[in-house]
Structure formats: C-alpha cells, structure tokens
Amino acid sequence: MAAQSPQEITQLLIAWSKGDEKALATLMPLIYQDLRRLASHYLRHENAGHTLQTTALVHEAYLRLACQKEVRWQNRVHFLAVAAQMMRRILVDHARARRFAKRGGGAQQVPIDEVMEMPDEQAAELVALDDALNALAKFDERESKIVELRFFGGLSIEETAEALGLSPGTVMREWTFAKAWLKRELVR
Picture 1: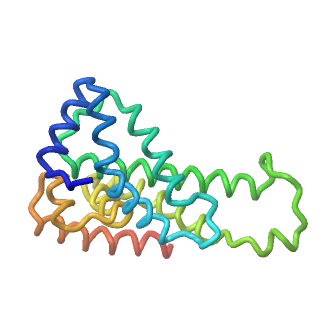
Picture 2: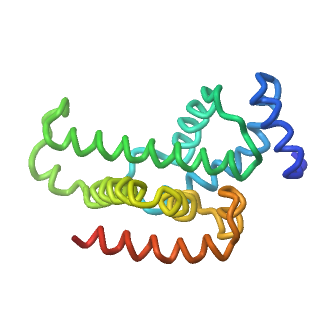
C-alpha cells in the first residue's frame, strides 16, 4: 500500500471525527504499522514471556480508539499520542490484574515453586511508573504528558512538540526535568 501523506491521514481523521465510518475503515490500514511500532516500543520494556503480544496490544488499542466518538482529531501525531496513552493504560491494567491475581484474587492454584519462577518485577515497575506519572501529572500535567509520549509512545522531541503545540526546546527542557523528577520518585 502506498504511503499516505500526513495531510491525507489528517483529512481521514477529521472525517472520522465527523462520523464518517468509511474514513475509519480507510485510515486503519494506513496507520496500522504506526500502531505496531508503538506497541513494540511499549513491549520492549516487558518480560519476554509477557502474555500480551504486539498484535493483541494493537488490536485492544484499536478497539478502544474506534469507540472514541468525542475526540476531535487534529492530526496523525495527535492520534498516535492518544494511541500511546491507550496502550499505556492497557499495559498498566494488565499489570495491576496480574498483581491482583498473584495475591490470590481469582487466580487458580499453582504450586509455589512455579510461582517463584514467574518474574513479576517488571509488572511492579510498570505500576510504580504509572503511579509516579500520575503524581507528576498532579504537579505538572504537561510534563507528565511529555514523558508519556516520549517514553511510552516512542515519539521524538519534534513529534512530541507538535502533538502538544510546544517548541522542541521547551519539550527537551521539560523532558529532562521530568526524567529527573521521576527518577527521584521511583527510588523513594
């Protein structure tokens, strides 16, 4: 399939925002690889045996995105920013459910030696990072959004600046500050 220009994708997003379901059907194959890139970026930080695979994460995010009737899409970067946020929520929900299950909440009985072999550190780290990002959002919502787009979404400084309507220099300064703030929060 030929690559579409950002303007063509933006036009499809706007048409979809206005209720054109055919625009959504045309749009999804065009941005599927972008969604896979986002999902791969997220899952790179997960265990090799993670139960969510790239395709499953993309499809879950697609289902959630397709239900977004109130969003007025601005452009491709705005769409990818929302998709990145959806994927973050999916992975955090998955990690929280896993931690809940490890504490006996609806989990099946498993011998203790098998439980000890199951790596849970990354799920706990993802939940801790999500908690820290939520704390950062209370302090500075824009910096929290920058971290989400850069770390979870894999967006460049320029793409993040475009998505948030900021200069690349501002994004770089706030990205640097937010990383330091989060590092301090996560070692507490």
